[in-house]
Amino acid sequence: MLQVRDLSFGYGGGVTVLDALSMDIAEGDVVSLLGPSGCGKSTILRVIAELLEADEGDVTWQNIPELAFVFQDPALMPWATVDENVQLPGRLKGKIDKKAVQDAMAAVGLSDMGHRFPAQLSGGQRMRASVARALAANPKVLLMDEPFAALDEILRFQMNELLLDLKKQRGLSILFVTHSLYEAAYLSDRVLVMDRGQIKGEVKPDLDRGTNAQDQRASGAFTSAVAAIAALMAEGS
Ligand code: ADP
Ligand code: MG
Image 1 (tube, rainbow, N blue to C red):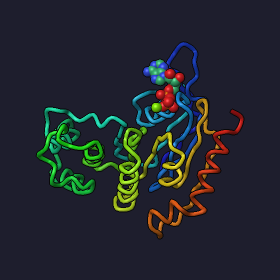
Image 2: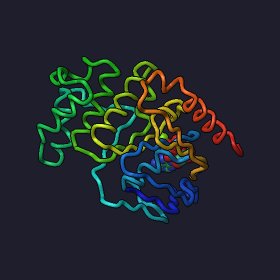
Image 3: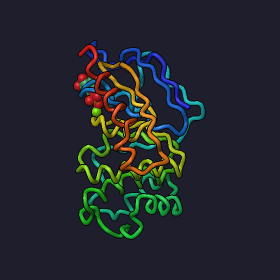
Image 4: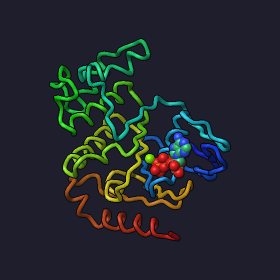
C-alpha cells in the first residue's frame, strides 16, 4: 500500500535527520516505529503525510488514501463541544458527514458525551474524542505519534484494545510511533526499530489474536517479541 524508498531529509544546517530510509506498509497492517528520542520518528510521519518534502527518495502510495493524524495532545478546542470538535475536519472541508461523525463517536464509546465540553471529559475520554475526530474523516490510514504516551497504563491498555477493534472493523492501516516496547509488541503486525534516521531492523510479534488480551500479553510470543525488540534497540548502541 505504501512504499518509502531511500528517503533523506534534513531541516537545514547540513544535519541529516532521515538517512536513506526505506520501509513498506501493507494494507490493514499496524506498523510501529520505535527508537530513541530524536531519531526521526515524527519527521518520517510528517514526510509521509506530505507536511514536509523529502530532499531525496520517494513515498509511493498504491492508491492515495485518506490520512488522519493523532497526536499525544488531543488538542480539542476548549470552547466547542465534543461533537463540534469531531465535526471540525468535515467543517474545514466544507462538508460535514453527520453519519461518519456519529459512527466515529460510537466507535470510541462516546455517543453520550457529544454535548459535553472537553474540560468535562476525563483524560481517556479526551483521547477517545481525538481518535473520533480522526475517524470522522473516514481515513484508510491513521498516523499516530505517541498518542497514548500521557495516559496511565490502564487507560493505555483500553486504548490499545480500541485500536485493534478499529483495525478489525474498519480495515485501517496504522503507522504508530511509541516509546513503549510493550505497546509496540502488543499492537503491531510489525515493529520497525529506528536509529539515527534509519530503520535498524524489524520484529514481527505474531500474537494469537484469537485469544483474549490477557492471554496474548502473557504469551511466549509476546515475551519473545519484547526481548527481540530490546535486543535490536541495544545493538550497536
Ligand atoms: P523523534 O520523533 O524520533 O523524537 P524528530 O523527528 O522529532 O524525532 O526529530 C528528529 C531530529 O530533527 C531531532 O534532532 C530534532 O531536534 C530535529 N528536529 C525536529 N523538528 C525540527 C524542526 N522543526 N526544525 C529543526 N530541527 C528539527
Ligand atoms: Mg517525536
